[in-house]
Amino acid sequence: MGTIAEGDSSSHSASTPIHPDQQREPGILLHQLETGTTSRSRADYSFPEGGLQAWLVVAGSFSIIAGTFGLISSVGLFQSYWQEHQLSAYTSRDVGWIASVNVFLNLFLGVQVGPLFDRYGPRGLIAAGSVVYVVSLVLLAQCKLYWHFMLVYGVVSGSSSAFLTTTALAVVAHWFERKRGVASGIAFVGSSIGGIAFPLILKPVFERLSWAWAMRLVSLIVLVLLIIGNMCVRARLPPRKGGGTINLKCFLDARFSWCTIGISCFEFVLFGALALLPTWGLGQGFSNQTTFNIIAIYNAGSALGRSFSGYMSDRYGRFNTMILTLIWSLIIAFAIWLPVRTHIVLFYIFAPLFGFGSGSIISMAPVCIGQLCKADEYGQFYGTSYSVVSFAAALTNDRGQGFVAFFGGILILSLASFLMARWACLEYRWQWIVKV
Image 1 (cartoon, rainbow, N blue to C red):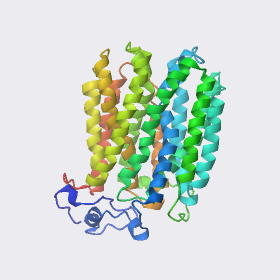
Image 2: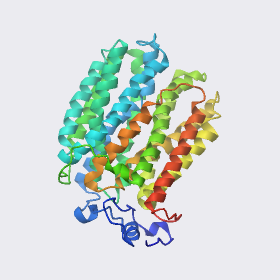
Image 3: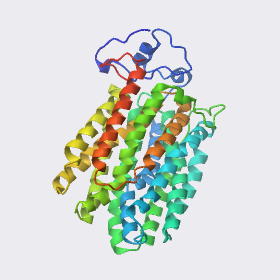
Image 4: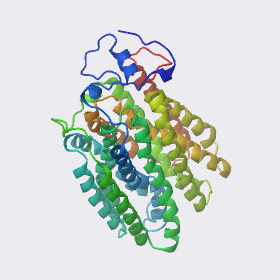
């Protein structure tokens, strides 16, 4: 097997190691690391890497992500409101299961939506998902009982958003390869913008109007965002023959398996932080105003991280960037979040710094997955990976005071998994200075 010479990382292009169905011949890995070749995708397809239509697709994906993941980023505020009003007779754990089911279905159903995207393209999936998703938000305005919220927000909204988020992220891979980190990062900024905007909109609305009118306003905003998404998103690569069905063979690739484990560990922390920060802040004695501010500040830091990491990953390597941002998040969790307790200044310092790290990681994860497959397989690989991730995201329904230290431990497992994935990408020949 050929070895990889150490050198300046900027001299290399984006690395995509050997696809499992290729024979591993001497020198192939070195060639791919130097040329940025995704297995057969560069030979089969060309990528615009820009242009009006390509950036319109990114804008459409941005809008869809803002209306779906952006609203999920505000779920902690929903839970706090439900806890004080409609569902005051239930424990915070019971209320938390509603959001957990939503996130679980959003990610789990990607195992089927991804292959359908590869086979049929984005238009029908986004149109159908948009209609059902907006209807679910309109119906949410009328919910009063626990089972109403679980059915409408947990099941219907979670299932329909799976069609939107999986498709919106997968379609970017049709237009970008060398600049995929930047393009995906910009699309993912939609989640942070939504996470900033929705809390700022909801706070005064909750104070002056009813829950029903607040959700009608949210439904209107989401409708506009999804109309933009439907108008802008276009497929580019031809349908993948034989696609449309679940295929778990990608788990035979050690790189994919380690990467999926690493993403699962981090998503456990991410969705736990988003759901628990408001109630945790109230439990520490902070005011409602502070918890609203923290969510917005957290998402502002996340937006910066998503943009910055995309540029860094295209320049220095996707797995390298992921590992560095995981180390950053670990430092912030143990050095700042753990000692916050009742120190409001530390709370405000923690929010943007941890948001920066988590935003970087969440936007880099799909790009790392895409580096391991052909462009026309990306929907299947992404959906399959995140179907596993969904189980981790659904288990974050914990309100214990020790969860911060526990989350730090899970971040260590995530870092170890991505180190193993990087090692596997290099065929278990560790090199420090190489773009991966």
